[in-house]
Length: 222
Image 1 (cartoon, rainbow, N blue to C red):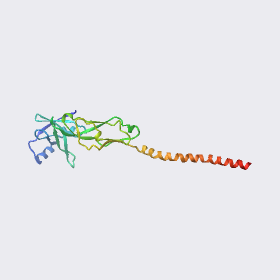
Image 2: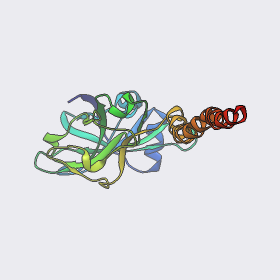
Image 3: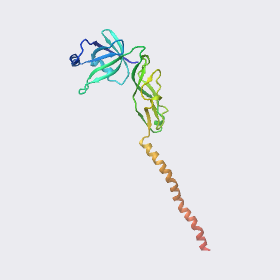
């Protein structure tokens, strides 16, 4: 799985004044928790960019004074006005301790319902799981090959080996819906079927009338 390295510095001064000073130097304060002890640190906004501004799930190895902490991203705080990154929370990975992580979904295959003219709608991009660090991975694959028109794939259908899925099992993850054209065709079909007998009867009416008039004409001749 992808891993990035971040060079950090141990925070020796805490408090609002020290924090403002760090931010004025384009440094971002952060905390690493979940391990033997909580570690307050800071790193440059540039160094954190590849961790923060991505949809990928990845490990972050934070080097602080020669000690490397293997972590995952847990939370971010941004300035409400400037939208600048203000703080980062990282979870240290401990081999025999389960963690809760949000893993992206990767949809594979061509849905049967799309081949039939429907439209694929993806309703979730990621799911939350609880597992040991060794089972964490970049994505969880979801096979949509057998997804039919008006069908749904739900959280309970996702295969996530060695993981406990934290989302509600009945939530829809992906579905195939009717397109406007298919809806129009379906609506037109019953009307066409209903109109066919009436049209046939209308077409047959002149022939029936002619047949009925023939005996009367022959009788008149006699």
